[in-house]
Amino acid sequence: MGASRGPRLSGMQKQVLALYRGFLRAARSKSPDDRHQIESFVSAEFRRNSKLVDRKNFLYIEYLLCLGKKQLEQINSPATLGLSSLTLRYSENQKP
Image (cartoon, rainbow, N blue to C red; front, top):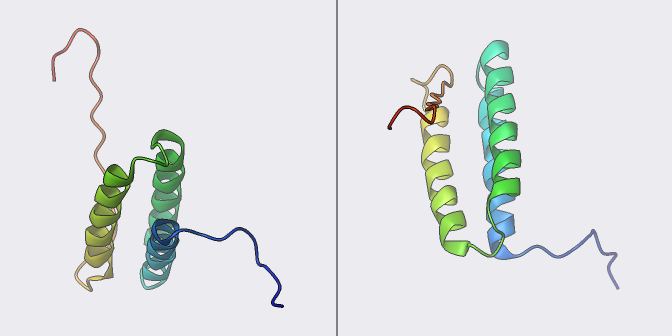
């Protein structure tokens, strides 16, 4: 019998982990400052989504995977130098 290496992962869990590893690999091809920024952003996003998204909401997880794959393609592009994000916050007095 083979030794078990932890819990068995579903296909979707494997896809999420592969996407995460893909981002980390892509970050290695960038400058040290951009690499740190990409790794920090990706880590924070994956952690945030792991806490906010219900594990049984497969449709939304598939959407996030598709979005992540597109973002990974952009980061892998030689023309992409770094990563930026935009966060909009509204006060309760303002309408979006």
